[in-house]
Amino acid sequence: MSAAKKVLVTATNYSKICQRGKAMLEEKGFEILENPHGRPMTFEELKEVVGDVYGVVAGVDTWNEEVFALAPNLKVISRFGVGVDNIDVEKAKERGITVTNCRGANSNSVSEHAMALLLSSVRMIPRLMNSTREGQWERAVYHEFTELTIGLLGFGAIARMLAEKLLPFGSKIIAYDLYPNEAEAKRLGVTMVSEQELFEQSDVISIHVPSLPSTYHMINEETIRTMKDGVHIINTARGPIIDEKALYEGLKSGKIQGAAIDVYEQEPVDPKNPLFTLPNFIGTPHTAAESYENYDRCGRITAQAIIDVSEGRKPENLLTK
Image (tube, rainbow, N blue to C red):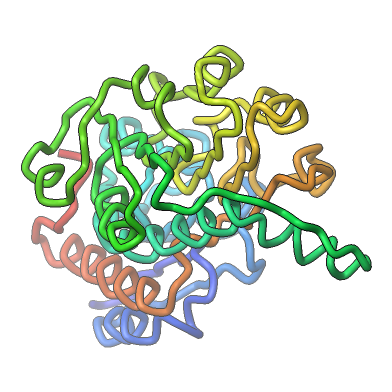
């Protein structure tokens, strides 16, 4: 490589946790530019650095035509994660920019976080901690998991791993997916149902669908009305799937007994978001995939994708086909 090609890493904690992936790029002569902000980069911040960038290890910053126009040397964006709703894949393809992701790499980490949120919501862990700290001795009562029906909205890799983790709890598990994997459902003892049946029958709904125009506000005032009284809603997928105003009203009225989410309609979330005023709401800052193991996997996968493109090979997990 005659001159060092630059790779911009907007995913956070890269030097700290992704040493193996970073070393792969450096061994091939790439110059690494890291996101110094500890959060997604804004357009103004990207504008200052993308002009001579060859590749990007992308977090959840927005990569669209406006950014591409400022990056004439950009050849590859490798998403440090799975969802690419923050990347205009079609415009990238038009400009000859290869886009890849880390399909499957974060499934276990996200399923673990979904399980933690599910347990915390049903057992009211944060609420009880707060009330105890305030001097109360609350006698909360909840159902055991053997009596609960858990509904998985979407039945991809993350949902299937969550189902596997739920098996020892003895819950009835149902799932809805546009393209149901009947073999996996049978293996895991999961009953495939319609979307309407899932909303009507579930005591807990865990969301595992992608963010698409068809899934925008899939959880809304109307669908909440069809759910069981006292339902719990868990979301580790994408924020726009839930209408947050409808979620707030459902929690406030008691129709929804608890909600635990890791993703929001706007990120980073506004700390003044009214959901945070409710005792039956749990919110984490989009950290479901943030495991050391997933960082290492994604670091190596994204590095290999950039190396493959630079050396004329077809990378894995190619999205611009």
